[in-house]
Length: 372
Image 1 (cartoon, helix red, strand yellow):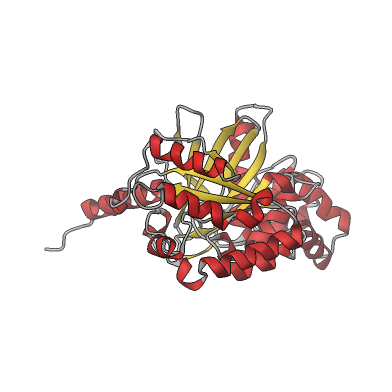
Image 2: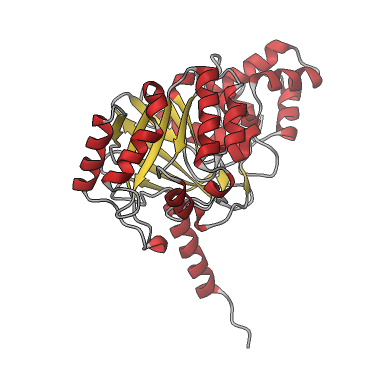
């Protein structure tokens, strides 16, 4: 049998189907439920690269699979490996657009940060992800494929390792791609496949209050992180455009709803910007903001990765970060200073993609034929 090598064609990725959807599709195409179970096993446990590798699937059904789907919709364009073991991937989508994915080695396992959108419309003035406006949402299959290709990094090296944790904190706003996000979570969390535990999956949002409430009702035991970055509306609006639509009062009403509904801890991400949000008075405001939810609130202080296009910002000094941290701790707020990863490569989210696109454009200008 001739194998059909999967490339990033225009057909949808089969990774975009949840197991229930794969069962329904298989039944609709003349197979029984067990056939979908076999296919699911080939995809996520044996991790085959072509449908022809599924040796217990009939030839005529493989033809139906090939007609309807590809397996892997992504092409690996670039890989950067840091001295600390962080690996940053640049993947090309079927429409030639680019996204980033990051593998981080942690004490507790291997964590992957995935991207959910091409570009971003949230408008955070310090962020490399927003340098290019949102072009489109990623499909659930394109998000899942990022995990599968990183897992392939281990498989190809014969390493008995697996992706154990996932953070949805890459390019884009996950809750702005809500339906595909939920399908992705259900796929990687499925016990019959990758079986990444719900409590090992974290979704970060810039503060879409309506979607936080919707997420609270899913029953998923997923961790929620809020990109807060400021303790008051004036500062937050100046660095995060989303705060105009969902000011802190609206955001925290939604967070309290989430806490009441789930009784799960919320992490607050706080990037430290020198002279902008890192003063002791900002820390005291943050303590006051979190006073009614201290038992379920956790603050992650993040060193800023400078972006050349946003040269109005620089990272806070270590002294200022420690002072800020001390105010939070004395105020009874659980907090940590995040360990940095990949500082010797394009560390900021969206930076590798942005720099590569600049190089591609420069190369195109050089090679463009001149008309006389």
